[in-house]
Length: 333
Image (tube, rainbow, N blue to C red):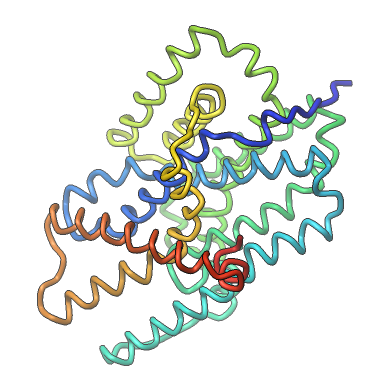
């Protein structure tokens, strides 16, 4: 029976500090790109963003569970609830307040589906990530508790999860548009997240074996393949291509990238804050520009909006994280 041996080296990966702020920028691009044809056309290059956040989260989560730092289900659930669900509820209330104020000012209808909003989706387009991650942690914790003693079975189980999820992803999408909100949410958000989470856990479980086989040829071919798959997202804008890109990207981040730049590390530390806050600036600026009769349009203005929102979100995250109460309950740190 193969038993997993835990090494200290894989408990911290400096390469993640490089990809987190880049992925956060991609998230801002995804949500701000619709005012220009070319920014929308380039949007396929950013579809990797949330899946890579999930893969990183589960690589680190596997390390915490398999190294014994998280012992009990109750302990894990309580910690993750505070870090994910409490900020989710608070930000949902914040964005609900903003939506209500906007609807009242513009005299547009204000409707809320309470179960969908407070258990799954939130009140802004990016908040679904928090409960989705929480439910995945609950699901995979028991699996990881036994994976250390059954490595081969763990690999087989995760491979099976990936295959089944990919089959669902490739299934007929036309019926999904007609389905109820819960079916759409599971199909479009939760199922793809199973693949991302499994990628992260597979890399952690097989870290030592992969590192041993990561020879000179891999050090040359992997960055090239990362570049090819990144560009391929533009020509084949499908989630599966983005997931394949993440799979190869992970090897490059784990075994080649070394990040020592202090500013990049600050951006990385604020990547979740940028993710949570950017909707306020993005919708606020666009709404304000519409009200004054100068809506954002065209490539230059849209890119300027995306860059500006990213910078403002970083500054806001830095300020909020400087307060211990806000950092704990709003930023999940």
